[in-house]
Length: 237
Image (cartoon, rainbow, N blue to C red; front, side, top):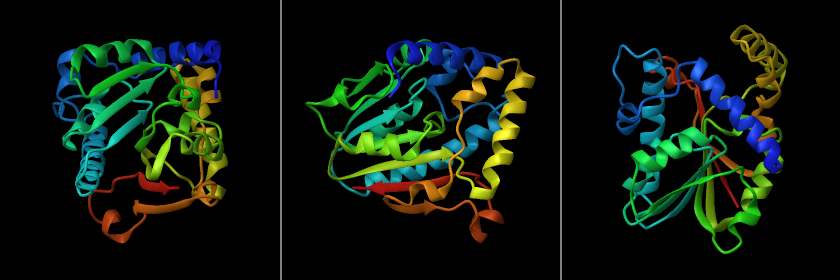
């Protein structure tokens, strides 16, 4: 995993980019996410995230038991807060982004909800295991899917699950062009160094694991419906 200095450097760069993209929101707006006014610049993206988060919450509710949940890359904490809808569960959100972690602590106060600043390291959780670990729009900031999943497996309870949502997975022959587009985007934005922290993963990267696709954006039903662009993948130990 990243050392402390690298984590801090990335966190500072990441929050600068989020400000530039108008993704850092007021406490009042964060409180009601994923609902946001239709006039907001990212309204359509939040509609996608509303649907994906509700699918995840409904799935976890069906387990009909309290869960210990970790969200890696929780940002301002909105999804961690929504996961408290699973009754009697405990949720921990963590992120390297200081301003939004502080915002999460301000906005979402609950005895069963904790926010931690830092980059994931399995050594942080030697005395705690999780039933569910969530990557929502965050696994693309880890260079190797295999390395990060191998690391988080050590923090999972028996029969635990890793859920990956709100992230693109590409066909292998699409990765080079996607990488090029990302580089051009961050250059246009004025933060070319951000491209070195953003990685493009393929479904093939999941082959070493016991995984299942729970939502496929390439399916016929989705293509003629809402056109949600992201896979929802569950990985089990």
